[in-house]
Length: 152
Image 1 (tube, one colour):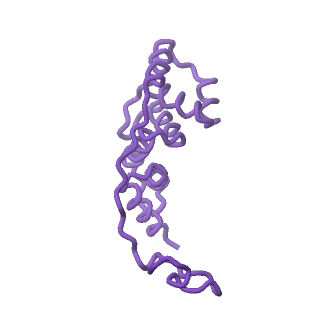
Image 2: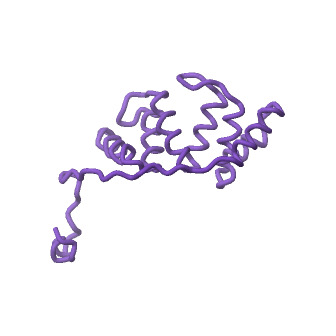
Image 3: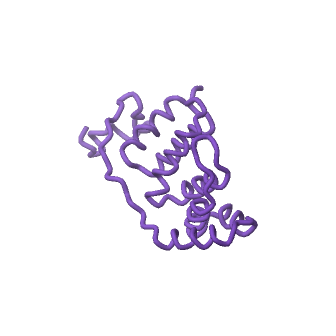
């Protein structure tokens, strides 16, 4: 079975401003699930979700900055900032990476200051068109959507 319909669903929701979908689409690009592997696109989607305050995306952005490459500049201050934000929201991998990293003191200090100043900026949500082929019928014995009071 192809992952293409799944990545298309994430793309539609991500474009509409959903940070969870943006993260999931970034993952699709990173891992090649329903899309060709494209690390630059993965980073862009992760960053959009991270800027909205999605912790798992903040962790991935921190990782990208800590290693650099494939469209992402190596920036330990930015890495520290995003990893601190992710750790603050309970992402254990970020906590571990910060605990065991050998970050220069200046990068850590600047990253901590940037993390304190960070304010999530939710994107305006846009309506998405619903593909009738992706709507599942109600479970057997539950009646039609009209009978359930859903109005369609």
